[in-house]
Image 1 (cartoon, rainbow, N blue to C red):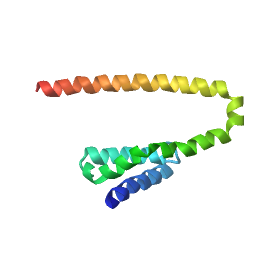
Image 2: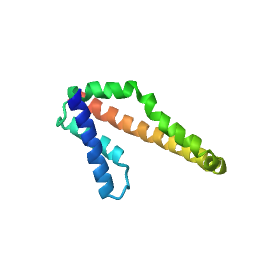
Image 3: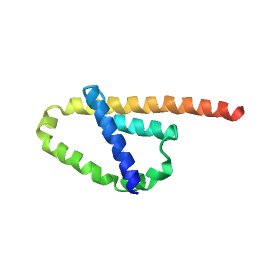
Length: 118
């Protein structure tokens, strides 16, 4: 379990460092998650080593939403001024994410069927 925590924190720190190098264009936590994903795909990191930590974090994910909720409550005065922009941004981003996920899923399904036919 301790090695899994170390691996996840290592990729988080690497992501933050890369994010700092590119002046925060992409958040470091996202970069770290992509690096961890790449390491898992390339079998550099074995899934069994991080599975207990990942399960614990997923089981307690609600705790990670508390700071975001507090931030929203603290910013209610700003949100009340720009609520239309927030609603439009949420709606547009939701539609874009759904469309992108649909295309990626179709692409993966097509390539998976092609691999099974071989």
